[in-house]
Image (cartoon, rainbow, N blue to C red; front, top):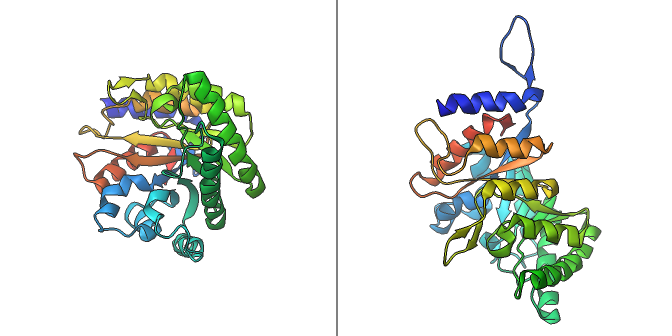
Length: 302
């Protein structure tokens, strides 16, 4: 029943993808409402086990899942990030498989909202390196984090300084810098929206994630995911379709995708939406396929 409702809901706000025809019913347009990409984090266990070389991400994504949009994770390439041949090698892997490199999710490169000016400057320099790599492989963005210290307002001010400094490099490379709701204050949609308005830069945006709304990992205090995505979508330049588990009808059990996808598409967003499976009951491959197939209900195409 829920699967039928999902299809019905999709058709109600995916009219642009349907063609009315008096002789044919439910004729699907060749133009998708959005394209489906794959977040490399969906394969983190497979990569860390050594079963998949991170350099073969494009091969795996295109051949195993039929997904050509690639979202990389910087941590899987730390050993090669200072290798001058690395960007060209990664780009060739994508090009050889007709894949599109979209963004790099950058972690572990210092706090852009650090209280100390020297520490912020170091973090900006380290993220600048990933901006250069992103440019070389053809991405439109990098995703960064909003780690800081102090009161919520103090952290807004500190993060704004770090982000503004990084945006100078992003501007020069014609790239975007995105923040994902990724724990702490960044998982508070109102706080992150305030940071967006404070920095106020056309290349500074959000990467709303359907599931990363944990405000405090000790108490497991949560921010409402639907409110959060609603607040972040006006600034979105990418979207992460987080998933953890599925019922027998193919519905994600932790997120109401009918409701969430309506929020996303009602804003007019028509960019890439990334599959990011993070569950443990299904294998990573099974979870990726289930998430990809669920997104197709709403007018997406890999």
